[in-house]
Image (cartoon, rainbow over the protein chains, first blue to last red):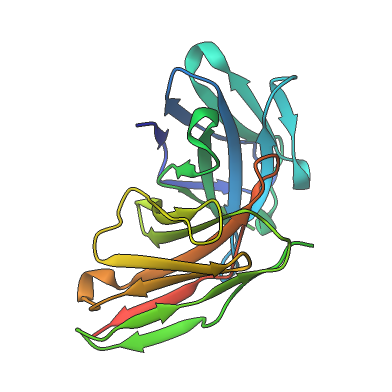
Length: 114
Length: 111
């Protein structure tokens, strides 16, 4: 079965700092990849997704992610964070051969200091 | 906008009670899912469904069952609630070609 690892449980940084959240998955076949965000008190929202094509994916709110197939990675980046980016971020993988169910990483809590 | 609605935001139940969590989506999605979310563990899949009256076990189905009598509605059932089922429960729906959309969640406390 596939698994998803997020390397950092907690990240604390200042406004305007750059953010990179690591995500690795373990599955050798074709996958779809997602990043979701959960702001305090709110439900999960899709930030961006990768199905095929250009491995550099741009999402909402200035986020982007790069799929590196050889490294089984899908890291999330933002060049300059804002206080409003304080949230929990989840990486998720969907194995095409297994239908549409998602496997999630453990999540990374990001706190941006004003 | 896709809307996934969970009937309750907060529930408090006693050990041994039968608990129903209801979820409705309004986008005619074929796929529906129930996850639970616990700190440090991310989201774990309990059950999912690809079609009406069809269900598949996820990663942690023990102690749960589901019902999908209509395409838009997917219910999670705790036959006999236990304290280790205290958690945030998230319903989701999707099409194969799109992302997965989540409801606001139901925070269940079992005392």
